[in-house]
Length: 301
Ligand code: AMP
Ligand code: MN
Ligand code: MN
Ligand code: MN
Image (cartoon, rainbow, N blue to C red):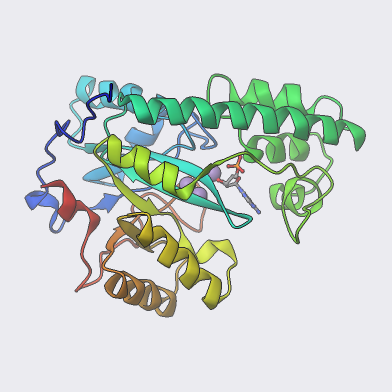
C-alpha cells in the first residue's frame, strides 16, 4: 500500500508576504556537518547580523534544525528558521548539490534517503581513511570521525585533520593533493562516492513538501554546454529553482543564472553557503534578490 506523503498534507504554511525587504539567507552550515559553529552560535550570528529568514542546510542531515529552533524560542529571537538540507548527488560523473528548502524533516521518504546518504558517507570515509593510511597518515579516519562526532562526516573534516597534522599547508591543498577529484580518477586518496541521483533527491524533497534548488551552479567547473545540460536535466526531473545569488558570483554570472531561470521556468534562491567566519563572505552579506526574479519563497504561500 502506498503511504500517504506530506505533499497531501502541507506540513507548514510559511507566510511569505512579509519576505519583502527582509534579510534572507537560504544556505548555511553548522557543526552537524562541516560548518564550524554550533546551531546555537549560528543563530546568534544570524541575529547579530539582523537576518530575518535563515535556512540551515547541512550536508545530508537535518540534525541541527530542532536544536536551532529550540534556541530561537528559548531566547525569543525574531528569526524565521527554514528547515533545509543540502543533498549530495551524482550526475554524469559530477557531484551536484541539491538544496531542499521548507521541508518536513520527519517525512519518511526524506528520512530513508538521509539514512542511505549517511551510509554512503561512512563507507566513503572508511575507504578514504584506508587510502590515506597507505599515504602514511594512519590516524586520519579516526581523527576525522571524532571531529565529525554525531554529525555528517565530510571531506572537509579530512582536509582539516590533514592540515592540523601538518601533512598539507592549507585545507585546499588537502583536496588538491589527496582527496579532491581533478581529472577522471581523482587524487591519491579520492574515493568515488555512492550518492543518490538528482531525481531521487528532488523526489524526496517534494515528498517532504519542499522546494528543490540546485546549489551553487557556477561552482561545478562545467563548460557552458554541460551546465546547460545539467539545468535541462534538473528541470526535466522537476527541480524547482537555481541559486542565482551567491557571495562569490559576479554580475555576469548572476545575469546568466537568471536567464536560465527564465528560460526553464525555474525559481531563484540565494544563500551565503556559510561554513565558518572568514573575511570573504558571511551570513546574509551581499544577498539581494534581483528585480524580475521569481523568488523560491513564492512557492511557500
Ligand atoms: P563532501 O560533501 O564530503 O564531499 O565534502 C565537501 C565539502 O568540502 C564541501 O561542502 C565544502 O564545504 C568543502 N570543500 C572545501 N574545499 C573544497 C574543494 N576544493 N573541493 C570540494 N569540496 C571542498
Ligand atoms: Mn560543505
Ligand atoms: Mn555545496
Ligand atoms: Mn553548502
